Length: 242
Ligand SMILES: Nc1ncnc2c1ncn2[C@@H]1O[C@H](COP(=O)(O)OP(=O)(O)OP(=O)(O)O)[C@@H](O)[C@H]1O
Ligand SMILES: [Mg+2]
Image 1: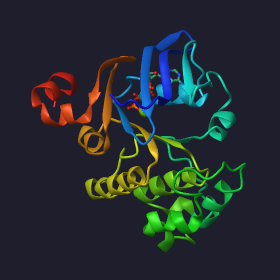
Image 2: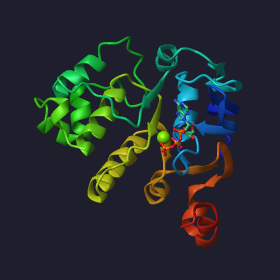
Image 3: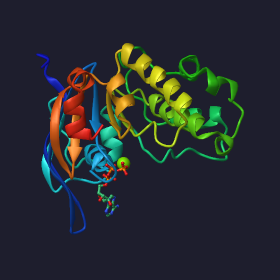
Image 4: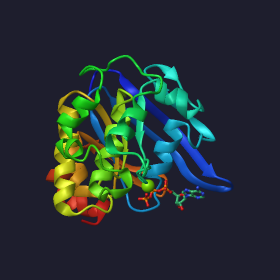
């Protein structure tokens, strides 16, 4: 366990959609500079956990503490302004705007102070994602799934987040595209960005994560260093049937 205080502390989160309870006391911590992964199958509550943190689906009970401030129930725009950038799984980009315009629009909102690696600009984003630079004039609606995923991440980076929440970035992408995306996320991590990742793709998660939480039916079944799951095949099999 790291000795630095957690930047994000999620304590005993309980969230429901109407009468249907989905999270039954989820607690997670993320420390500065860490990549933490929430691993779990379809429907276990990965997206709901992220939505609860972001204020999109406020929890019924529990706390979300960001850098010692209780942000539970804050509206999403305030959570974003506080430094949390959410990349949703459905990749909502503007189909009629070009790649450059999608990024430009994202840079016009209220901007935060520059984070660790300095403020994000379109040039810096294009350096991280050269593919997007090549496609700068192409409308978002004509991008492939992988290109759309890059643009969704890039657009969120334009808001200079301190913590990036990535919801299933590898979903629906071809293996080679997933490898490429993993390298780009690894680069963000090496630049010092703190990342909370939700994934079903265990291999992808374990390559990137420092620590993991395995989520099952809205509760944490396991938490520990990613290395433990990488090295212990029996544990991996028990927890993830792999
Ligand atoms: N808007 C909603 N209204 C009602 N139930 C919902 C809603 N969104 C999600 N759920 C239910 O909550 C549970 C958790 O869903 P969630 O999307 O958080 O899971 P997930 O782990 O992200 O799954 P996936 O890997 O498929 O994205 C599921 O049973 C789902 O059907
Ligand atoms: Mg999900």
